[in-house]
Length: 429
Image (cartoon, rainbow, N blue to C red; front, side, top):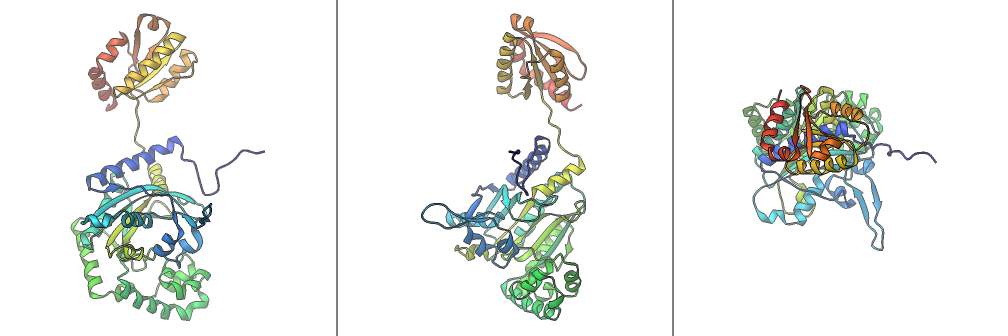
């Protein structure tokens, strides 16, 4: 019997890569917390009907990409692993009566999503997102705020070559008129469209604009623009969003072909794109979805949000080689039964008072432990052998200068402020 491998479309995130994920999550958590967004955690599987009603049965996600199965037990029903985060957040918003609290709810989440797609760099069948949802405001400032926060997160991480593509898909009346215009335009070309676009022609013609087929893209170049079909209110909202972005110093590019892949979008739709990622260029995507809460059984509630794909983002950060350095305060080496027992006790005491350290558990010779200490990135090494164990002392070796001193274990634990100052000073050098 061979070894069991990770399933196709899934991958292990190993420690050297996890530091990038933790960095992204830490930056996002800090910025979102300062912006009054509250974290929400929803189940990774939901009733299939949630996504059929919320995302739209005519979308590729529902039609081709969802992981759906029947529940076990007597009352069998269809369950789906979540393909995106918004529908679950909205379901929770309705079910838990958040709308009854009044005012605007600012929510954010992070976690795995699941779609059956052809795996490639930056796109897996299990993938991860950070997302935000602002529920209860139709104000154009909400659209501008979520875009500004996404921009802040990406720029704080050091990303440079970013472009904001933005469009308005209008309200349902605007879209219905535009939908008919697209049908009228594409119908004469129907035999030249790719198979998926031929199916979409009558079911969801806006999705033809998203086709990756070369010939379909050529035909779509001269298709009508949604911006020509916006009503007065839709145009006013979009103009306000664009003016607010200008006021914030956020540059943008109008993209009338941008429709996003989900049926629930209304008005603003946007993507933040990196020029460093090749074909998988979108790092953040989102927009307004004023009809989704009511579609899922809640009251009429305007809403806007976005999601950042963590796989694509971490690929970018790794290319930039900007992983934050995690420096240990101490590396603890010990040799001998009594010394090893004392080393564990000392390590735990230091951890409890706030120091970071690694305790060498190999039991190997001092030479090998010192070699690992050199590679650990620790500021100082604590050494315990038979003599130190007998005398209740410890050798402290500063890794940068190789200077070494012997002190009592009591003094080490009693002068924590002094050691903290020295270590922090050395970390900044």
